[in-house]
Image (tube, rainbow, N blue to C red; front, side, top):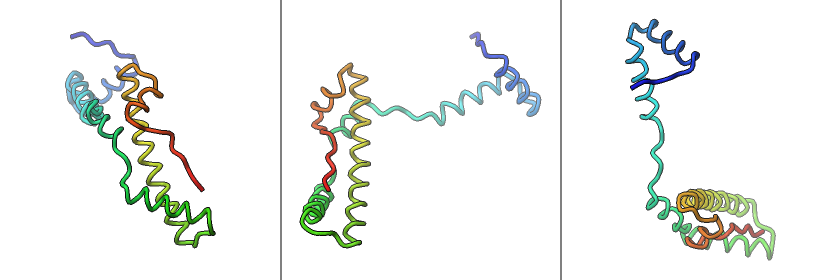
Length: 129
């Protein structure tokens, strides 16, 4: 195999080989192995579909809906506002994860984001308050 690297990369490899006393080829092998050992494995389509279909837990949705309904009727206490913010952050994070999965699936399947959202029942997140 022939590998072409930039002069800068070559100098880095040569410097590391000289510093460690390890042959350049072995330094390069270690660098490549370390890179692939730390590179994330992309999720499978099945894993992305599982994430895209996963609704937030019902008890979290119910608690959020109860607090937003109460907020429309009367001011919330400080602990209630804190709980509402905690729930909103959790639900928002969950929605972001689902949207990331749907976006990746849309790209892999050659679909528009809108079509893929419909396929997995993902709607834009509505914030009430």
